[in-house]
Amino acid sequence: MGRKRHHGRGPRLSQKDLLQAMAMQEIFPKFSMRRVGRAIIWVGGLTPTPRSQTYTVQITRAPGAPLKIEVLEPTLRLLDGYDRPEHTYEDGSLCLHYPPDRDWRPHKLIAKVIVPWIVEWLYNYEVWVETGEWCGGGVGHHGPKAQEESCATAS
Amino acid sequence: MQPAMKVRNPNFNIFDFLSTSEGQLEDLLRRITAALQLTPAQYALIDQRYKGITNYLDAPGSPLAVHDPHMFPQGSRALRTTVKPWDRQEFDLDFVMKLRRPLRRFQAKELLMELYSWLKQNGNYEHMLERKKRCVRLSYANEFHIDILPALPDPERGGTCILVPCMKNGGQGEWSPSNPEGYVGWFNGRSNLAMWEKALVAMKAQVDPLPALLQLHEIPPLKVTVQLLKRQRDVTFNATMDLAPISIVLTTLAGEHYRGAQSVTVALTDCLDDICNEVHRTQGALVVRNPTNPDEILSERWLEDQSLYDVFKHWLFAFSARWSQVLEARGPELPRLLKELFGVNVVDHALKQQANVVHATRKAGLLSVAPTGILAVGDRPGKAVRVQEHRFYGS
Image 1: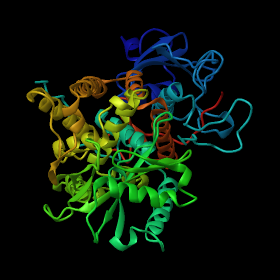
Image 2: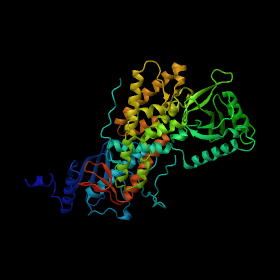
Image 3: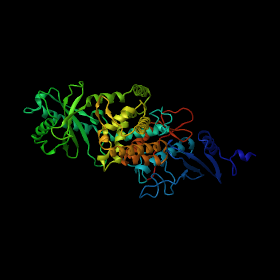
Image 4: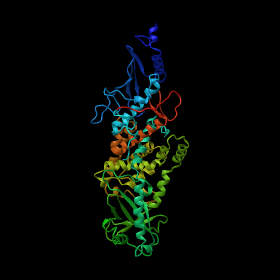
């Protein structure tokens, strides 16, 4: 009986995992949660604007590994010459923050910090795939750019 | 009759343009038309050219000076509905040279020739000058054309009514009735219908987290609607502009059918719906007149050549059908349709501009996400979560 309260099989949720799960349930109730071993996986739909399509997103939190954020559906469109969208890792998962900035710390809530970043990423991805420019700011893999540029929009 | 298109909930908040589908389309349309406006530098250059010509008409030795010539803009320059040229299309500016106190009678052709000859004597204008049927054209290379229409006051109709040359039947030509100044007054009146003015006041009273947004929405929706109609026309008829419906006809039709909507989305939808209905109701070609001088038939070409009217109808119905798709479009479909209608560059420009605003909003701590996963601008009540400071990583 007690097991069900702890979201299915596997060991009990740690206090930290429980806090994360409760916050997700509270703020984004449409996300479903499941456990795979000691990892927790949330899956849910995000629609950055009412004119956007809905993206199914998966967030994986595993002990000792960085959070992994993937877009499961639809398959992300790419621009010519790209094998993955801007601001993604080689495996296609999203690069939402620049670790040296320490904007994300594991004690922060995924629901309050990560999910809003995913939505912001999806919005900027939609603009990127249409226009070829990333307008959401950021840092390149080869070190910080001289400044955070916004897009040049001279027509 | 075509069924009226549906635009749901037109009362959106311009500052929270992300969280409703109407608000987001409206924001994009406003940004598309912002990219179609002439730049202040272009306006300054036009004014400089125009002042040069005005001075020359009054210069010593000018045979026109004794008749008190007065030059003023007409058409899109006066209405502020000029759109940047599409592709390599030419960009026309229309001016009227009215003799305010003609000391003698003029035949139409005679006045046209008098203006032409005087400009021809000027070394600056000599090589860029061309005599057209009703006007004299100065072509500034890589800039624009200035068409100058000579005119006399219309003593019969009075007021701001004028007579302009009509060379259709050859010979010395005839004078035909016009009223460009009256038209500007009419159009500006239609643009500032009480309903829109009230909406503008309400908009200005809202708390604006990003002042540039108000500026974007201040241009009367009718003017923007006219620009969108003209732009779609330019995109469609790129290689066949001779067949295209002329700007003054589109402007008049839009002005007549505008109902005071506060949003461009609704204004364009209303105009397309109503113009389509009027076309369906009308037997033969529509007759579009200058509302301030009913003797001036603006749609003359349609009466002379029915096939041009058929081309207009075809274009209008196709635009209207595409537009109803835009109203419902989601995902990649929306930018695809907008690009098809208004051109790739301006739509890309609009998308990037909007994204820049979203980015600035986030940096100002004013971007949030609702439990539905939808972005919103401004302080949100309830369970919305603020998007926190961060930088995307990776390339």
